[in-house]
Length: 131
Ligand code: CMP
Image (tube, rainbow, N blue to C red; front, side, top):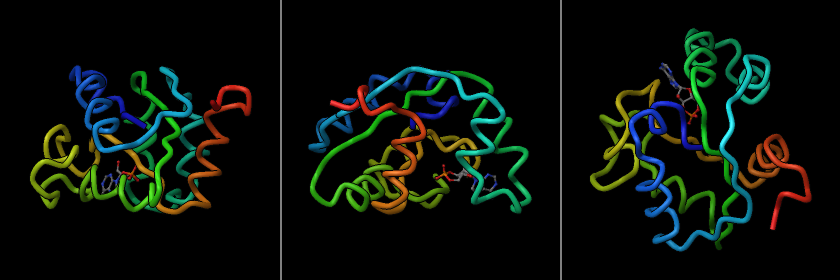
């Protein structure tokens, strides 16, 4: 996902350019806004964390771009491309170093495993929306 902060700040195009230049194929994509229920479900794994309420409020405050990306070693390579969760710790040139504001408003989300990528892809897209 390209998160609401990066969308608000006009970074959709630049982020998609970095993603495709890094060799990822976009197999599904949509511009949409999460409801509170959607965000609570998507981030259910974090529901006991102290920042859960803030996270849901942030993720629902404006539209996002959701996408499914394909590449060999996609999960690991995408995490390298976006950088550390906290942009203050992200490597130079990474998406979060360039476009994120702080650990909460960190511009993008990437799946942390192939299994979660399947679950998260199915959350956003019907089978007929994946090409
Ligand atoms: P993401 O990679 O999408 O996974 C969980 C999200 O929770 C994370 O990016 C941030 O947007 C948010 N998050 C993680 N840690 C914190 C924190 N300490 N305070 C606020 N939000 C956080």
